[in-house]
Amino acid sequence: MSRVTVWHDGACPLCRREIALMRRLDRRGRIDFVDATAATCPLDRAAMLARSHAREEDGPIVSGAAAFAAMWSAIPLLRPLGVAARSPAVLALLEQLYLRFLRVRPRLQRWAGRGTA
Image: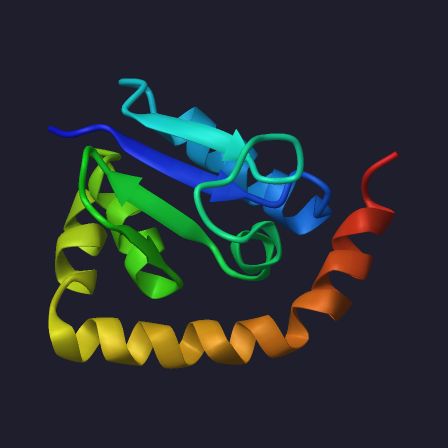
């Protein structure tokens, strides 16, 4: 199974919670989680903070639903979901859901931030 690099917004309380869960699920240590707020980014930092990004081994950097598919595929428990998400029809549906999520993300970030202190 290949390694995956996932860039995330370390300043986002919602993102921190999600990454904490993914770290717990990644028992084999296949994912390198990179805080895009504190690291050198291979793409424009603002773009990397606006959407989830991932890269499998030496493959291309993908974003949105494709980034989640890559991350899920690296975690044995979530691998079936990651494989299903690679289907063009499923990926297109997940991308539409992800775009809707991005519209409400600022409100969710505020809500998630209330639980951290």
